[in-house]
Length: 558
Image (cartoon, rainbow, N blue to C red):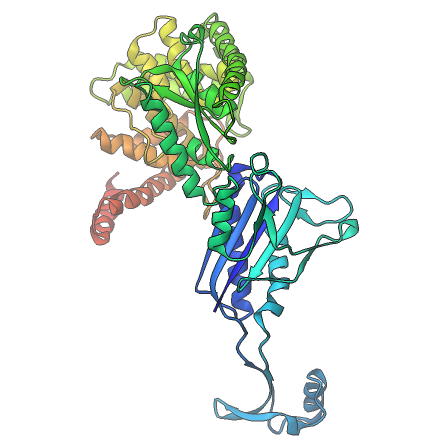
């Protein structure tokens, strides 16, 4: 048994593509090793911005000898059938075949005994094929060939059983073939011309670290986490929790160094969500918070180089860039507040919700009516406040801030509503009307917020089911499963008792020209809710037969 080590060195691979590429490469190599009768004991992959590495342990040094057989005609078959079978298999006489019985009938079989190859002879072709088969979401093409790879490829280095493996990867055209190498390079800026041998995995990984490259993403993530925590603690602050950004930054650096910078006080009057979104989206900065959860005028940046001045020039440059970014955010904030949300409603007439379901303005009118009807059925919910929140809940879509940062939908609407004197319950309902957007998202509990959030989701479901755009298989382009789960969570977590059939009929009636009838749409939606409810109840440990019995009875009487 031997170790196979592969490294592909290239220009920077986008962070969002790295995890999938590592999984895909492991599968491609694993499948090809299995097909070649070289099944390894384990396969591990590692990825950095510039390199994709794979180590397969326990690869057989040689393929096992095997037999390959082909079934022919039955014994006594017509002579022409026999001649065709012999000719197809390159045989001159039937005596070269074996007779075997299949279900009581004798058949001729061609049996060839194939001697196994040395693994070193079989591996190069399958490695080259796996590399060229990587399914990148976006890739680059060599100028005069159809061969593609995510970014310009510098070298491929391969060793097997601690020895260089001879082979090449063919790009076609003028690019020709690139021979497998035996070495790689470390950090682009910090390692200089230091050569890292690709011979065995343990030595390779250690040599890369000595050349300022942490190969394992888990090691880089841990170093960033620890660096962020230490940097924040030294200033009496904490890091805003952001696992997604942490994963992304892990894919941007090979040698992470955490530094902190300052946010100018003049920007601290802008809503914290706008500041953190600007820092996160454009600059990949981590926000730092005070002990009470408020945003501190500080940020953390992860550099990819350990500079001789302790990072002073890096921090200075990042602070300068951040001023320009936050100046844009402050401009949007100042400009947006000049226009009341109600004055933005006419602009929603020009925003299409869906070609068959009308404009966003029409959607707002439907949600407003449905919110009022739901508020009348929810204890503590003010009907007029629910209708006001529904009327204004989509107005921030045409604001400058949400145009720049779509993820702030609803959040900015709340700020603009408060700025123009709206009641806190109305402003909070504007913020919460998208919630919950997933299983980990907090579910609204304020009565007005619950009414508007339910109306928004029920309108979506009634509309798309009414034009027969139901989810199919794994496809759910309009996130209707998520909307249905959101409705169920709002009802269950707030202990609501609602006549769902009547409400769904009202939601259907808000549309003018749906393809499906109100009865068909409502029946389909009730079954859809039942299916989603089964999932929720199973996760809570309710036995399957209890769920089936109760739902079978309940659906009859809803």
